[in-house]
Every structure is written in C-alpha cells, then in structure tokens.
Length: 525
Image (tube, rainbow, N blue to C red; front, side, top):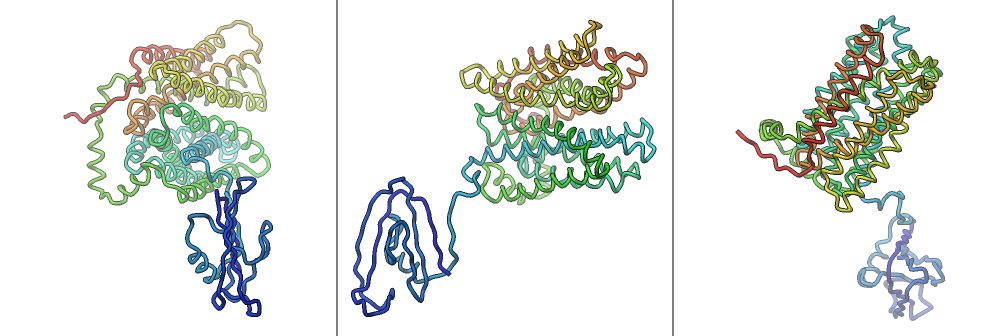
C-alpha cells in the first residue's frame, strides 16, 4: 500500500524525473535520469509535501496539477537521493498528517489547568451526591438523624486528615501525580458506597476515603499552579481550577435528583464514580503528549528516592519558619473563617429555605443551586479584575487584601440583613443571601492565591496547613449549628451570627497581617 502524506510547509523544491528511453518500463533503478527543478510559493501559503512509494511500480496520480512522476520535496529537507531512497523503501498506508485533535496546539499549561478544573467539578459532584441521596438511604435503612449526620460528617474526617500529607506529597512527587491518584481514590471509594451502605462502619470508611482523595486535591492543584502559571495569570488560573467546585455543586444538585428518581439512589454513586475514572484515564493520555516543567523531574526524583530519603525530606520542611510568619497565621485564620460560613451554609441553607421561608422541597432544592451558580460568574469577574490590577502595577498584597475583604464583608452584610426582621419578601431574602455568598468567591483571587504568592516552593504544604484548619468547621461548625438551633430555635443565633462574627474578625486579621510578599522560609533549629 502506498503512503501519501500532506504537510503544510513554507517553501518547496519540485523535482520531476523521467526516463530517457520511453521503450523501457518505468523504473527507479534501470534507466538514466534527468531532473527538472522548479521552486515557487503557494498561492494560499499552504503547501504540501506529497510522496507515494511502491517498490514494484510507479503509481502516482496528479496532485494539484502535478503530473505523475513528480516528487514534491521541502527545500532543505534532504537530498534527492534521500527522497529516492525513501521511495524505494516503499511501505505504509495512505494517510494525512493534520493538526488533530483541535486542542493539540494549546499551550500545555492551559491543558493542565482545564483538566484540573474538570477534576474539581467531579470532586464537588461526589461531595454533594450524598447530601441528596441520604434522604432515600435513610428511609431504606431506617437511619436516625444522628446516624445520617455521622455518615455525612465522616467525609470531613478524611478531608482534614489528608491536607498536610497531600501538601507534602505534592511537593515531593509533583501536584500532577498526587492529583490523579486523589481522583482515582475518591472515585473508587464513591463506587463502593452502594455495596457497603447497609453496614454503617463500612459506609463511614468509604466516605473517609472519599474525603482523603478529595483532601489531597487542593494542595496538588496549588502546587501545579505555582509551578506552571506566571504571576500575571495566576488569579485566573486559580479561578478556573477552584471555580470548578461551584460548577460541580450545580451539576450535582441538578443531576442527582432525576437519577435517583429514575434509576435509584445507587445510580448516583456509580455514574459519578465513572466520571472520575474516565477523567483519570484521559489524564494519562494528556500526560503522554507533553512534559510538564517540574512535574517530570519531581516524579523521576521521587521514583529514585528511598523511603528514608522521603522521611528526611519531610524533616527538611521548615515547619517552624511557617508558624513564625504572621502572613501564614493570617492565611490560617482567614481560611477557618471563610470555611465556617461556607460549610455551615452548604449544610443548613436548604433546611433554612424550607422551614424558615416555607419553601417546598423542590423550591428549596432549586434555590440551593443559586449561590454556587452565581459564584461561577463572580469568580470569573474577580479573577480578571485581580490580574488586570496586578498587570497594571498595583501591589499584589493590595490586590489580595481587597479581594478577600470583599469576600468577607459581602456575606456578612447580607447575613445581617437576612437575620433582621425587616419584613422582606422571601424571594428578596433568597436574593440577598445568594448575592452575599456569591461575592464570597472573591476569596479565590484573595486567600487562595496567597499561598503561591509567598512561596511557590512550599505552596502545596502551606495550603495543606490552612486547609486542615479550614476543614474543622465542616466537623465542628455544622454540628454546633444544629445544637444551637435545637437550643435557641433561632436561625439568626445558630447560623448567621456565628458566621458574621468570623467574617468580621477574619477581615480585621487579614487586613492587618496578610502579605503576598515572597518569603524565603529557612529551617531553623
């Protein structure tokens, strides 16, 4: 079979070879030859290198008006003897060398950011699926509210425990490798839920594994961004990646109810886990296409590192220097404050909408989608503003403080309005809360960029530290809100006032102590 290859080039040299004796059969070896050379530019600046080789018999049809026997060579691509040698070797199939797939020429860092964002979409889909499936599961297995709460909170146990190990592993092996293992871990653990749902300890363990897999992902993504994205693009990169969480929440809330109604609650875990496994397989393919600066060397080094050396690398982390930095403590407290408002609202707002605003379950479910849906828009706007300010010469610290202040004061103001008895219509209260929680997404261009700003080398570990503390409200805050609600029967006292307190104090600490100035952490005895 002949091999026909078309390739876009810049300039070409055409050679035409004919036999001096027409009585002899056409052959590439038996007859003297004469050459005619012709060089010209293409009309449309798209030129092709075309060759067809069959050892026994010349069989080239006309291509763009060239007669049979013409060979088209790129100038400087090699001698004619090389071309003839290639013709005589004759093998292969007819094909076209085109730019496919269409994203082939996209810069590698953009591919990595896009696929990481998709991982975060799946991440939150697997986080919210249980909050919806818990209702039919509780009915089927006869769970009390305490058991249901235990099952849901078990996710945060694994999530909190995996933050620091995830940051350390990302620094040693590279965020890319840790991310793909995390996605595979939480996807397989999600698929286990229907099998162990009837055995509560097994179900708790499976959700802890989901939390561990998802817990290493923020640090892995932070490491990836710190290594691959320049400062002037960092806010947008963080927005795209962590904005996937909001998209995942919306997708989970939209897809889970119809899946449960039509295919049963088990289908949510099976289908969502397949999405994660599919992502893992596709990510391997992306990894094979191009290398990533830093990741490859990290993985190669890690593969050649003994367990003892890995332990020594953990000792080499300047832990003491971290906790002697005011900027690090500002990030820790800000992360805790932001997570308190986020996790308590994520857990209790649907109940608030249903009980306090007298919305039915369908309306409450749809209303619960509004904050993450609005966050998608706010995140994109905030990141663009932040990067433009930095590019125009505004100090990075100033930009980060501004964004985080908006992220704290906006929900605090909206919760204050919602907690006061102003006689507002229910849908206005919904709109106020939605707007406030959406504006809290400015934190993506504030707190969540600061780890990379102050230390790209230790960004993953720093996020592991702050995210460990930030996971505590998921364990303590959600339970405390329920306890206060039973004790006071007041949504203002149980849900809004604690969140407002942390938002305001977090703002003060952030404005006074936060900094994005690069710091060189050195180990101190």
